[in-house]
Image (cartoon, rainbow, N blue to C red):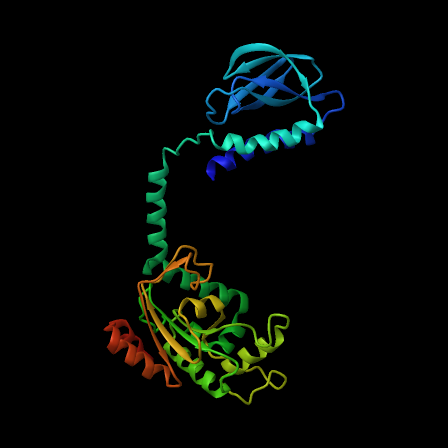
Length: 326
């Protein structure tokens, strides 16, 4: 695949160059000693070629723009020979594209000498990103930005957000997902949201499979989330500014698929969660690895379910999480 990409890039470089044409110059080709040589520049009567790979010494052609009929071709800085400029025709374009596949079979792409070193540095950087120290710095900076942007309004809507450290004690690679739906009794979903708010751990999240009423309309989903997170169910935005619970709620069908959730409510405790790209869904198996997971179905309090999972998994962090939420 990589060889084919290189071959296509070589051809595209030759085909795209004619887009910039000077009135006094003509488009054409000069022969090259190897098909992997491309034009670097034309200066007067000299054409300079450079290699972009090794094609086994098979002759090729390089696109040029010049008003001269003859050019002296220099290969890697040394004069190769003087050659006539071949006029370019329409058939040359399709022929060049056809040759791309042929080049793929012989083109050799040199290995990056620093590849292993780069992998090592990338691994160090990723480990640092996942470290508790760096995550604390991210959370601190997030709160600072929220405070600057929203000021006292953010504190009024989310009073717990400015009260200091998170209570949560889950490990960086642990997650608790509470799978819910708008088809559930609203009070049941509100109870889970209240529990998530008390736990105050960013790794505990409410998850919906999709938007209420489909993706065509966003307003029903906004209204549902507002009803779930409001501390006072009777509060309406038209009457006053409603205080909202601080609880993560996401729409992510990939998480439902990853953990095989076929009914709600369901609670999943996952361990060893490592995402290559934190910006993508943790439900994408190509993006995120997990070590183990525990799933509990049924309408029970989140605290009770987490106690049961803690006993089954032997995970001390769940016990700490529950103690600190009391």
